[in-house]
Image 1 (cartoon, rainbow, N blue to C red):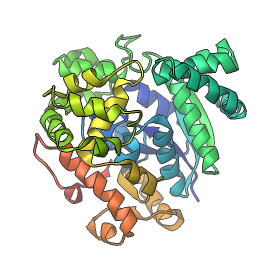
Image 2: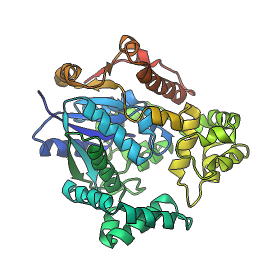
Image 3: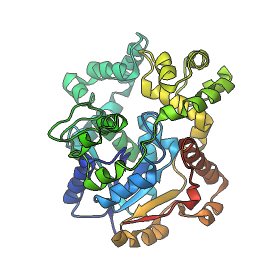
Length: 395
């Protein structure tokens, strides 16, 4: 049986840093195939993906990935712990992934694994420090940093102040919680850091690339993305959450405070602030900035609003703690035999067409329908294409 390495990613859009990560992963794993669990139509920061998942999957396959699976929206647009659990759970369910590669500011998975163990060992002290700091009015990231500094020391807290280190630890925790036979692999990030607006040695973060593209500065990204991506974006319209502003506002205004309280990430009376703000704002940016506070990050507020649009509730999270199907977006031609191996070894059903969907359990169908609606919502201001009419990508 072929053993593969998994990667959990958004590729929003795919850039040279992503290609470097895949190349280094193959260098470290002896050239094994790489299977990517990639976010679909919506991404973790609470936004519609810049480009549809089929285009982004094609870019990944053209630049080293061997197969791309779609991470369901109930995990791709969730806080870090659930995002990680969904990605690890999906890759583990294939039956052919035995390692997970992730980019991190700390390029040593052993150090991050020790950090994960330390956090668990000092969970009582850490939770008490976190609760105390949160009660002072700090945002969750700021409170977490202060609590870590108090319980683990300044140097460890510094490591845990880096976005990709934190996500790496979440992956390691997810592997442990699922008792998955997956070995974590860290690849040190180089060049522009996560969400950086700067260009460093020709590299740019995905955030900086999206900013350049939204400002029609396509030439600015020439040296930051593979040629296949650069040649494509000039002829593609980038999706933007502002185009869904009216739909989001409409849905929120139809919800009572108690219905808003049922949305993921809503707590401590936040529903009342959202209920009022959606009546005072007509744009997504103004709405989310109006609700944002020291306690609640912008990404969290954005996710809440999009979950309202997509009809995703806390009950949905409880009913679907892990992915329930494997959606293959595409594969390299030489990797097509892996699909046959997955069909034999996977613990979840593969969905490639309507006939596969019809065979799913009622629970899996309910989860899959969230993805179908996410695609329909993302395409509200463009030419909508049915998910069952999309073509499987072979590169």
